[in-house]
Amino acid sequence: MPIRILIADDHPLYRNGVAMSLAEEDGFEVVAACASASEAIEATARLAPDVVLLDISMPGNGLTAARDILARQPDCAVAMLTASEQDEDLFTALQAGARGYILKGVGANELIGAVRGLAAGESHIAPGLAARVLHVMRRRQTSAAERRPIDELTHREEEILRLVAQGMSNKEVGLGLNLQEKTVKHYMTAILQKLQARNRVEAALIARDEWNLGGK
Image (cartoon, rainbow, N blue to C red):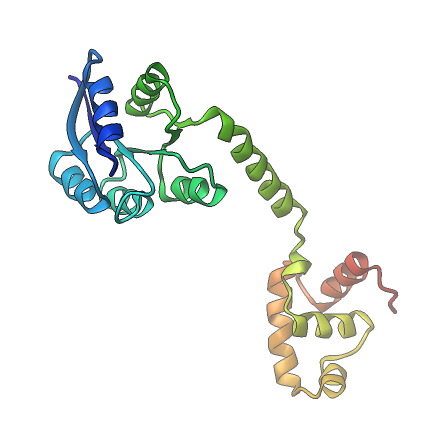
């Protein structure tokens, strides 16, 4: 069975050139060449190609087409074939579920290899962009790892916990912050959940340790 490919790009010369290069390859069949996002969405739903190559800047936007296609056909191998090297476009495409991000300067042999890989379930990101993706992913992982549960507290919850860490009762905290005691209890419940603390004493100890507070 040939790999069935759909191409969408609003520049006829480029679209036809890509279609011709792929159609000449053994084992490939170009089932449609579209000029807009709406055409690509309709043709993909009708023809169910194995691989869909989408330009970003075509009418209707290729990223919109990618989201729509993958929402309906999540197993479709969608890739962007674009001139855009913008981080926002790259990460929007990946978040939408695109398996590939290929730059238009790619040679025919590399494009053919990328399409074969996409059809086999592999991912393909332009070599010049792959390092950027890895860097951002590592930065996000580091940021998430460094974030502490106590950082999730709201400003009011932090105010209350700081007073509790000083040894104040709920009633004393309420008087100090002009809150009803039952309101302070409500906040304390949320604080304990966020800190995964069993009681107010444990929460106070966590606060003293994380914020380097003195306490009773």
